[in-house]
Length: 162
Image 1 (cartoon, one colour):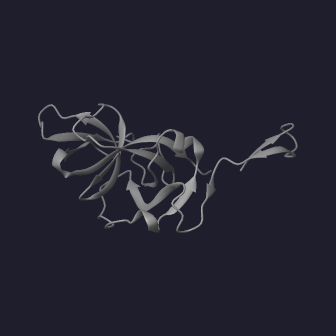
Image 2: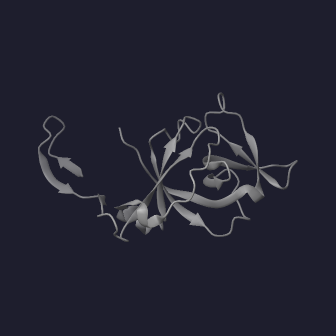
């Protein structure tokens, strides 16, 4: 819930605006929260298949208006200061995974798990992409074979709990 206040000294609610809410289990309304972490660090073991009907779902109109298909939680520190461990990313799946906007951050599902990385062109390896971390002093870029990308999503929103 977002509350507007009359002044900075007193937290007296003027009115309340609901910006998101969880829907009851079994509902098809809302955006599913995938119960896997998107690793902002090294690839992790795959968590196996996830059934959307088993996911918690949230109604967030701003993200629905941007075409978000799912929410996923960030784990790790490789994308700091852009994304922090615990952030929820609202993502829209991309159907054609042959095309990349170089320099864009994507959520990539691979055989090693789900990754959050900035994608760059690999000049020397046409069959791979270069995955780059924001926290490059700790996490070095690595090559990811294009044929290991199971799905590709663009980030359309962020929820950060403080």
